[in-house]
Image 1 (tube, helix red, strand yellow):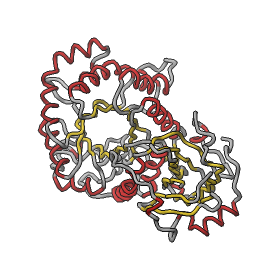
Image 2 (cartoon, rainbow, N blue to C red):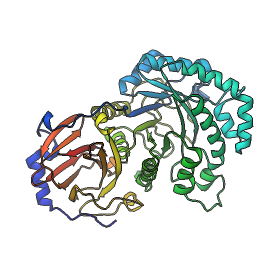
Image 3 (tube, rainbow, N blue to C red):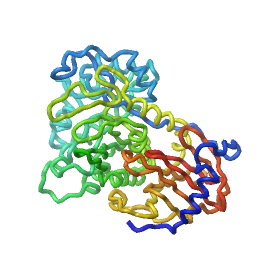
Length: 473
């Protein structure tokens, strides 16, 4: 991708790193007079997808598991920083109610999956009905039992809503639209969520037909938003894999974020991402802060307001093709290294989430390295910003992206995220020449700091996987 900004020389960048600490250790403490104050906003959603499972819910060698749906295990989720969880191994009303009540006791909220009730269920209708008319007919027959369950759930403060279906093809959209309309009319205070497939899915997965000439952006994502009219958008895209000893990053990772961010902006609907937190197939096991932070901060650079784990609890299965290692906690609830990494990242986000949630996403400026070696993720972006009125130039030692935001008062905000592969453990010094800025307020690593802008210029040292939110003042 062609560099879109004029270069700032490396000598100047190095000088700024030394003189200001590179927005690093020992820099200026916050002057509260320079820090904007914002009204209380909705918290960022960190969702522990696949929470502690009930007894005897595993398969194979894990089929006889004890009951892990305990207050202690829910407290561990809350201790990590999660404010939502989704039940996956639960499949009875009693188990769902137990999950809702446990979540409520630790200050969390709980999404149900309505998929295993023989007298009728939301996901059952979605996967069985091929047309709108079939879905309406099935709903008329099953409505009483579905309504009774959700009226019971809705009586609890800990109830968040339903994850109605995961990774549907377009063939399921008619039925999803019927169930979404019914649900939002009858239970408007909770969420009807559908999680979509990523760009690397096959045509068969997306459209049910390998031979169709249809596009992911227009015919899968945009059509879903228009046809179903959901209240929120969600998708998964697991970018970090390993083939033998070679680490790989999905080339379409940023493009996928761009598609959902633009659709979110166009329609005014929030969007969530799923995080890769389970080692399985060829996907890497998450071990370090940078593995988790890389996913969270790149998503936030594109305006995401929720992040869901795949998975929190390690799957209670391990078939020959699954190659499961571990998630945030192991199969018996033991905290794994990724749990502590997740806790650190969530704590960082919590420290500035109210600021972030008061800004609206505008777009993303790529900030590729001065010595550009090519980056497929950047090269595949379809609508990157090429300039911004508050930024005169940018220089970077390693590839980064700059998410562009604006608050209700017209202030500019920028989320700078290091996009180098976290396995490489590389920092990037990103130098920005701001127009009309004497200082910058920086939210980084759980702190709020204020730095002088020397002739408008500041260098931000962004560690591997890290992100920093910046407001020029």
